[in-house]
Image (cartoon, rainbow, N blue to C red; front, side, top):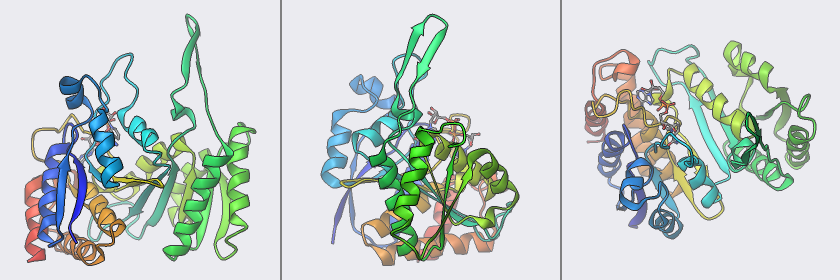
Length: 333
Ligand code: NAI
């Protein structure tokens, strides 16, 4: 079966890592017609909007997108293009697996957990205003509906993926109403999944525990802002941002993208690590039920890591983005 998928190369290192990923996906033999769309800084120049209507329409039609990072231009009037896309398509569950890779130096070589981030509200609702000059109000929105739906997604994911435990991370001791509601919804949903252990941790302690003893966690569930910070922290535990994949899942569409951003400091040099976006592509292939291609691509990547010869600079090697893709493609032959 041929799939039509929206492809967003994105900004900065985006086009480089996406090109490497598309070549690798195609080498697995899966048939995909790519519908390329631009968003972010590039789209602003061409369409006068960072999130053109054509991009939203393409994803709505195809239901799946592979997305490079997009830069939100600095300055007043620009709300985050990534947050905007997730809200426009109601991609409520941000799923970020954090799994150590073979032979990649990191703090926790056995680590395997999943960060589940609520993707549509909290302080990222974008409701900010100047009350009087020098005083700004920023509203944190937490709803029963969104908190319940991310908890449902997390527990169902645990059940489907043979995970044993879900931990809510929150600050309900201080934000008694907002984080309190999030936590209440989490435990209400937990009652429907007695086979999955449920517990919670206050976010500051949770961050310390993640750094000291992350193996105690399996699935960690939290609101938007905490999830944004904790997923970068967790990427650091397995060797850096170049390694952590992600998916944004909604009822009607899903987009697959790395945790990292457009990395302007290394853009245009062909040296970015494409692993995170390639692993996001593996998640995408599973989502569209191309299980064989997904496993082939993942296995080939793991073999390259086991060999340890082709490593990008962030992992202490000298390989380029294209070298890494070529090594994976060689394993697929
Ligand atoms: P960043 O994630 O782009 O970069 C942070 C650091 O990690 C940099 O030193 C970068 O070189 C390194 N890095 C990131 N990805 C890498 C890779 N694949 N290989 C090797 N090194 C890598 O974060 P930053 O600099 O805060 O954000 C840059 C831009 O990206 C901003 O405009 C931000 O809004 C946007 N952004 C977009 C995201 C998305 O599209 N989902 C997510 C996060 C940021």
